[in-house]
Image 1 (tube, rainbow, N blue to C red):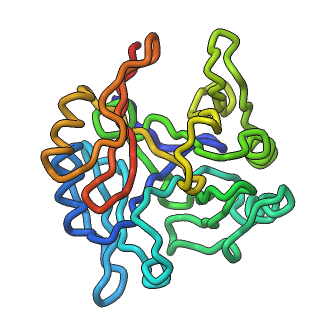
Image 2 (image 1 turned 120 degrees about the vertical axis):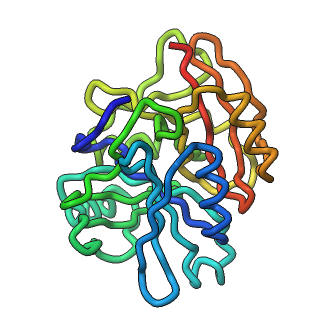
Length: 260
């Protein structure tokens, strides 16, 4: 286990489920990953769920907003990325061809954030921590370990994120697949699969990967609880074993165990 008290700028720092059925999602993920639940009131009939492992923040969940429901937005996982300034990041994103969904705003005393869409269509959040640094635990079952960007234009996306976060988006010389690796400083944090591998009609998006101790057992358990396996457990030689899952409400995520 690794405890985290502060996330480096440019790293994935929070992961948040937006779902059509928050109580059902709490039941599913607490059973799948062993997350404990802390509900925080957000008004008379709404609450924000924090998922915890060993007493530390691992993820969160909320209910889709009425405007999202009216537009037919399906349940999804939202990625947050650490920045020095949410206001500056939102402004720079627009200079680089992206879009900010309104100005940056404070989340009580937890931090300041902005919601951004990259030039190819994928949406993410930037986070400037105040009292809440974000995810507080790593390298155990049920923790965020990676994220892939599904985009029809890897070059344009690479230029945008490199300009916004200083990421290096690089191809590995020994990897002929065309997969691009994302490095934040010295750390590999995610990647961009080849556009040719994208499923037609699926909007650009970020997909979160959660570390698990046993991919096959976790995928089987998810299916028993009503999830769909978009990708059955498979091994990537020298990399690890993974599966892609849609939870019972339809939010898609991946599970992974490293070969190392």
